[in-house]
Length: 606
Image (cartoon, rainbow, N blue to C red):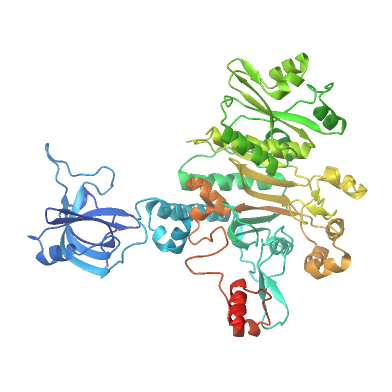
């Protein structure tokens, strides 16, 4: 249907008769002569309709509207360029030529669009409803194509590294991955259900037991959890597992993989040997296990400063084994009342037990804070020196348990950077490995211990004695996350490959022997037959694509995402299912629609 695409023709093609097909990107009437920009996925070419060349095509061109699909045949000519007039367009690669149309065929007319494609739209639900139109916009088109490029680069790299791409089941058993499973009823097995995989964790470990040694998959994963800008109910992982490897082997592999993806997507060279930081240091210094290291606001411990303090709040915290720490938002003493209210709100959400953050700011040579009157002269001097408190700075304090203080100041740190626009127009890509995560976390509500990553994660060899002794809080895992600019790109671990150790781990998590056999019998049985040492990692492809594209939401790099309520407004899913179909899979809904109940009540009254 075409001889060239819409970004192909150049001055070397002048004089040729060509055929193009695409969408009308814009149409302009210049004194009866119609100019249109014809667009396909590759670019734009200007076409002109002159009555002296073809009266029929010229007449028909007056009926064109934006987004009509048309086929144009004509001769390639140079755009007019003289000392007085220059109609060339340096912004287009085809900007020095145009097509003088001799034939026009309207393939498909377009209705009036629900929104303009050449402008950004704040109504995301409208974009989602007409996603096929939204994807025609240059930014979205670029994002989807860029995602394809980095996905292909990942496949090439892993293929060259000796990995096999192997598909694992979508219909499987529930897995303990930290979120609710999506369940699928089985018609052939009444009363039984499949679960959509939160991750292919157990299958990829079984592939290692099978002796395939190196596996990867661009895997679809499903989690029924609350949504946010970088989370969807269905998402894509680059899933990797390998046998006979150490943590160091996985780290080197992933650094090379990410370097290849960013080279393909952005044309930049990523320096390997990413910096490394323990989980404990990340929390103590940045208040996050996925710290953004592009800005230099760090948490500072003030235990020495207030070791002998008589300030009751700090005294009681320190005597109770807690910490007093602070951050210096340099140059932010001019924080507005609205910004301060927002910081207080965030701190309370993060666990601050009072309504307002304690602070000291130095503004116009004056120390402003209720605390300044309480501190002794030596404490004032020590705070100023330790925090490097200078004109225009504001220092925020938090006191309490080590973990709560880290979380509070970490959230405040990030919000201050946002308010101060410290990362505005940043071109930094600060990769980081966070290692030595805790193996277990204590759930205060249930009183049980839970796996920080998943129950197949290997305890650190130096901490196995602590696990045996029941000192679960101090057991580290051979686990690692790769982080970029405050986002976790992916995480993994070296796995447990011994049946007895895996059974012990399940016991610590409160899974008795009977439950172990029901839920994980296949894995424990497999470990009886010579399971190799193995480990792996899963990278979030959506999140990587988002960062490569410079977007703030993964919805901008997914072709057909769900909105923040988990709904596809275009396909109108989720939807109601007819009673007959539910009956066939032996399912009955207990949900009662309040609108229908109200209508039924009104009908009964009438």
